[in-house]
Length: 368
Ligand SMILES: [Fe+2]
Ligand SMILES: [Fe+2]
Image 1 (cartoon, rainbow, N blue to C red):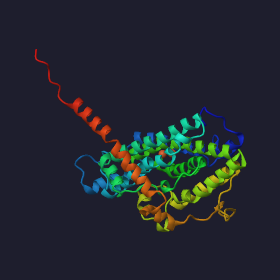
Image 2 (cartoon, protein in one colour):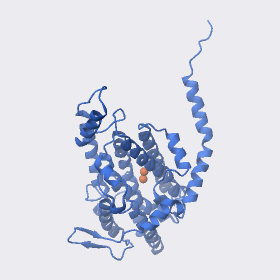
Image 3 (spheres, rainbow, N blue to C red):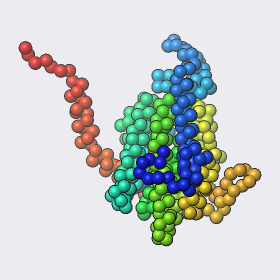
Image 4 (tube, helix red, strand yellow):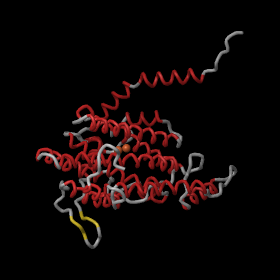
């Protein structure tokens, strides 16, 4: 699964990034594969439909029964308005994150240190555009248009992940983003492959498979730097120091302060709490960091025998809230860039619309 470009060093394989290692992406990929099988099985065994004449109570009972049976709600199904609106909010925020998330690494495409690195990074950033498109398409099945969601992003009325408001200062940041940011994304998103809304679950399966490649490319960049000159190793450590806590914050506020969690759990949109996922991520990273030979910048990080998990320092949630509210190091820059890119793309949208109108226009037969 490492791709054809380079071999997996033995020690990397042992760090959870090799086939089937616990906690590593291959292990997570096994979970994605299991979710994909479950999705197919659920499609084959549907709870009996209440029929078109069903009233509100019957529809709600049917909805609850589908969720209870771990089957999928599909666009044609009735769903409570709060379920629909909550999903639109979540999927849109996720789609916007993929699109804005292209910017921090896009900065480095022209400065990647070799042709191979450039090609890999280009493919990775392009994947993120694809993720945005799958997700906008999934949101559209809930009755909202992609244009409307893009307008909400541009107007600052819908959010994207606050992690993308941090700058990428050196090439090592591209490695740290792949390892930590895409790594946190995978841990967050693998459970979404079992989300109760079919189109979102299907999009997540495809996305998680690609995110696994992203994490490996970042890890491999850091591994190369950490085993290079002392200057390269210091650059890798500096990047990890800056990205560690913002990555922990990607799991959202602590459970006690998380506003949408309980209802999302009941509806099987969310399967684990923010704190559970954050813990899983920390445990996964510790072993991988030791193989890299890099330190996780947390003097209080240690194994807790009783909990069978690592104790660690929480990220600064005040900073998280400040960045979410628009006052991070790059919020304005990211928004300005997206506005400019949207304006620059106007002619493409106009040309596509004109072409579609031409194709759909009734053909006039030439006079005989
Ligand atoms: Fe992505
Ligand atoms: Fe990614």
